[in-house]
Length: 194
Image 1 (spheres, rainbow, N blue to C red):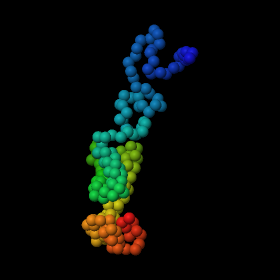
Image 2 (cartoon, helix red, strand yellow; image 1 turned 90 degrees about the horizontal axis):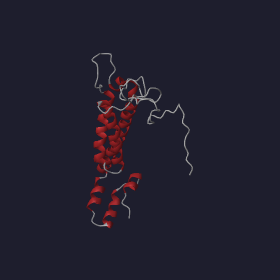
Image 3 (tube, rainbow, N blue to C red; image 1 turned 45 degrees about the vertical axis):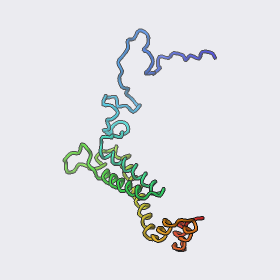
Image 4 (cartoon, one colour; image 1 turned 180 degrees about the vertical axis):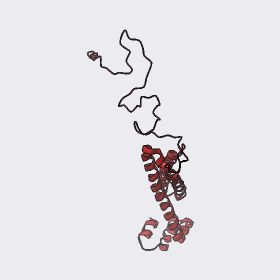
């Protein structure tokens, strides 16, 4: 293949290119402009709300609890769907606690002023993704707790069927337990299949 060299242009903005001949090396400086950097040397963690999107700060307990609420609620919902209600109930309760404490909590640098905003409102523009995570965690936690409680309610309401099914030693004895179920949708769902 022929050599495909690009023409040298004086407006090339390659930060990794060697300096032009005759000019000395310069120390690195952060860029300024529209690339999301703030250019004042405070680093990307400066979430004053004036420049660029807010970043997740793992040292802030409010943001941590909002993320924990989302993750615990999601996993609690999955455990509830896959038939492990005890773990789903535990994770749902934790997600409910973390979600509420994230929405009502005070930020790490809270001021003692009586009119100062509390909870996620004190984060300003950075609060939107955290509030979304906390509310999503509350919703999934509620669903996980609902699934776990409905599973326990079914086991309590049809206790005779579950005891009969668990004590059955053969498949035919297990099929006989279907007579303990009602003739409705719940009975069709719980029925032992051949």
